[in-house]
Length: 106
Length: 406
Figure 1 (cartoon, each protein chain N blue to C red):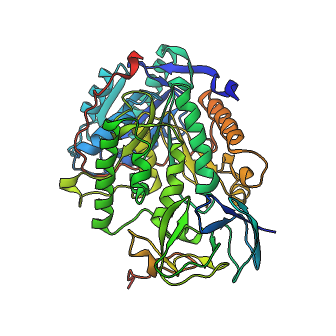
Figure 2: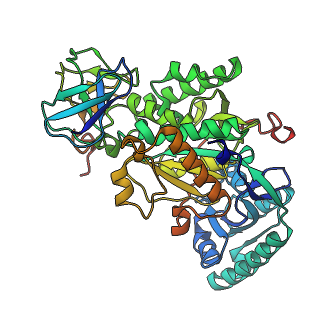
Figure 3: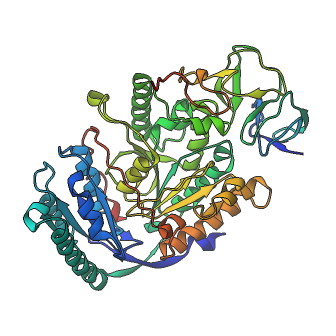
């Protein structure tokens, strides 16, 4: 089973060490199998617990952003559901490619 | 474990006491108009590399950067080539290089003739300079205490903060413990980590320097609305600058941070240093801090790094002039796909095949091999990308401390 690595005990997300379809084995701080609500790719993050809208998303024991809507355990955590406390621009980027959608090319 | 970091090899002694791991002739052009001739001079020549300044106008920051590369420990001699009309003066560069105890020459293309005659003249000069430094440069034993290593990350993904950068961080801890120096740049990739960074300060002075540099970087990013996180980072699983920052900062290891140096400034004493490449207040709208990875690598080399580690999760095909670039990836998939360019696979730590400490030890051995003369992969491929930026930074105090007394 693909491993999802939880770096710090305070973290509410874990990073996938491979692509996964429906479940991951959480390693590092804490452990056990976790059912995924959607496929998640290598290097991306999965929520380890439900996170309410406006609550901090924690990785490396620091706040890496806040939930822009409520997130359920097993959900992919990325641009579509968390917001940076600094960079207000990135929330509108394409969630798969990360490409900015706010600059005109014509 | 300790044996790796006790290794000694033969380096090149410069008159300022610093030691190089290469003995290069650097061809420096002073305006874009002279770039073709500069590259033609270096083409096919062993141990001859090119950097150049694109603009006709001079810029104090860029001159400081170019001079720090011209007087870098890996450089033995310099030929500076200009067209003849530009503000930046090749003869002044050659003069500054000669004062550092290195042979140097310069000429204007308009005086020498055209493309062919200037190329011939330049080739004769670099052959002569190369012969001289091969004979005249004293060889000397060196080890990790004589090294300054730089680290830059580019094309980061979710593995970079987990293993790619932490392996380099462990290596930096060992190098610092051995009496050497390490530099991290990319202060704009510390956004969100104010407290984490300040907690690493060696003392109050260092804390003050870090606090000032951090505040400036945050102000800069808000002003230009540009954070150091790119589409490839997002696609690789990084979601916010705070998350990327924490991963990027891992490459600084865990030793106390001695303070902040600016571009073109070498660490005044050994240890772990942060380099500030952000334009200074008054001119903040002029120039960018990290327009691309190559710019950051040039900055690290300007600080005297003899070797630079480049950590990339998604992969990259750049190299650097003056100091060899060593490519480290925490993503084993990237390593296999781009094996022709990647030097080190830190993804083995994620696979449970080695620990971070074993990774740092193996990477340290690779650094020692490269210091001894083994080419890194980008170096062997002939990658020598360079980028000299126009921007404004207040002039640093280049005489702070006295590194060579120790």
